[in-house]
Image 1 (cartoon, rainbow, N blue to C red):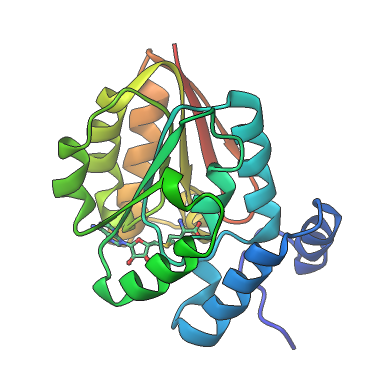
Image 2 (cartoon, protein in one colour):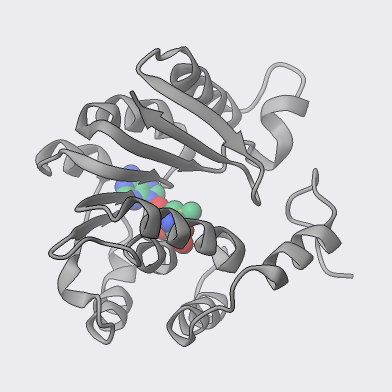
Length: 218
Ligand SMILES: C[S@@+](CC[C@H](N)C(=O)[O-])C[C@H]1O[C@@H](n2cnc3c(N)ncnc32)[C@H](O)[C@@H]1O
């Protein structure tokens, strides 16, 4: 039997949501296939359900300046870039040097190539070096650092800018785990609480896959 990844949503329902989202482009199908062939944890790829949500958001916002923290195989990068304004740019940061060749080749063969700036290194060092103001920021790297990413990213977001963060339900553990929670669960709970307590943000968790934080800077 196929494993149910997100225990709080019936797999038949998540499969249905994947199926009913707009058809996945050939570029994204290629990334998804390569991710499953090459990567140890392929489930980290955003996939068509979440990716379509990103594309829609990007088309609505028409952002000039986007930041993604945690590139992995570039699936969400292409989705977030789908609605970029003319001359818009997306910066994306990946710590794993072994992903670099794949990413540069894959982006190199894509029409969005000259709009994507790939940074290889630790996002905690790189974010402060990239010039803001961002219209859209997506946090999706190591979960332990989410509270630090929040502090760095909130300063880089312009007023009216949108903050997204993946895995904020952390397989349901943020709500279901009895104390003491593991370090990653604690960090994600902390992140969620920081965003919620910040009066400069309006925020909501959207239960797509492992939970997406969606917040706008007022
Ligand atoms: C969940 S995956 C990203 C998935 C991708 N955003 C998508 O939606 O398809 C997380 C990625 O963050 C990277 N990562 C982990 N810690 C990092 C750090 N400190 N700086 C930059 N990238 C990091 C990992 O190597 C991994 O590729």
